[in-house]
Length: 114
Image (cartoon, rainbow, N blue to C red; front, side, top):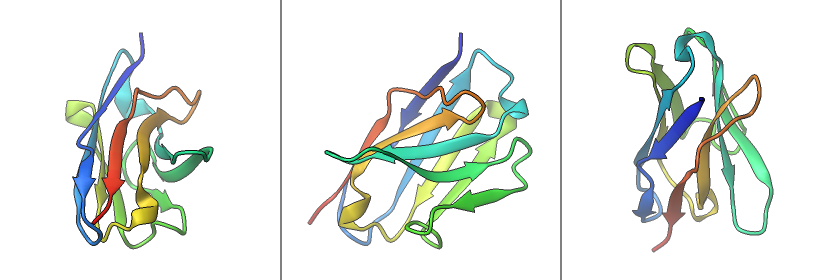
């Protein structure tokens, strides 16, 4: 059974930072391209970032480029998203997602507010 468990969200002031984690199990994590996606209240699911299975290639949505960094630890089956210079518009539920079939976890809430 594929299992993805996100953590690390919270309340942070504008300009602050957070590091999200996603613990993966039930599949060969190192063989899969992974995404981070987010969903803000009243809006649809939006793709944020992608990392290839070997971690060598990363891509970002324009809205987060230069502020967010995706990474992975294949030895420990964990995906990360470093969020810096956070803005109020980054407020959303964040999900990690297996790219091949778009399975995702339960999400972790990020709220950016002063």
